[in-house]
Length: 79
Image (tube, rainbow, N blue to C red):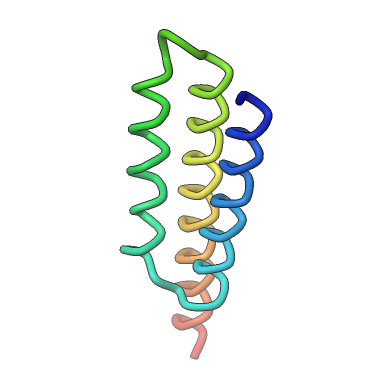
């Protein structure tokens, strides 16, 4: 179950990054962060590897979202 869970977290993270890149939808992307945070909290005692994986996935999505928004704002100010 550990490998399968981490694989699904990876797939979901890639899907969230695709949504950031193609649709620029912050609200939809933050749902992934919320879900990953809930997974991390729930699994923190019973399965720390899953908790760490979910936390890293949420952090990666937040960083990508912040980088994309910063890039977008940087491009619009140069117009």
